[in-house]
Length: 174
Image 1 (cartoon, rainbow, N blue to C red):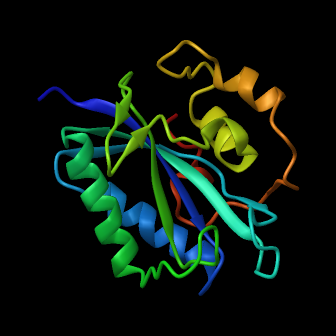
Image 2 (cartoon, rainbow, N blue to C red):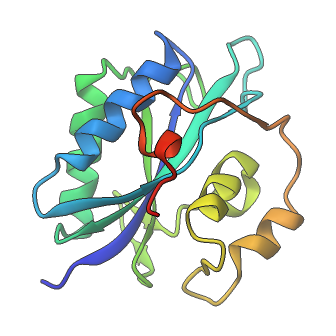
């Protein structure tokens, strides 16, 4: 299988979120048949859903992978489990959330996976990191991420300082 460009959303609001995300990026970079192309800056934002939880830290990565969509999903879920992810409440607090946002130009809809991610267009904390990675990125239907970002509701997004040693602190894919 030829490598495919995939975009992964990252989020955390428990157990030192910046460290959780940095660890996840390192694990994503180590996936078989996968290259980490770029990492976005990290952003803090208010939680979606229950407000009685800490703010989230979010970002995204651009991967080039030979893994098939469900293989990649399994790998993402294994990384979440390695970070002690527990699913107790929809949109509740979590140590790590990894979402397969885009997989090439494919549209995927089955009982385990929907790509593009179903909430992508409604989340500034997803759209902005995607724009940071690939300013001209489009959805499979041709919608530009930049246009979606301009019309997205503001969730109090705040750019955070780069994590030392991360791709984001060294200029990404320059």
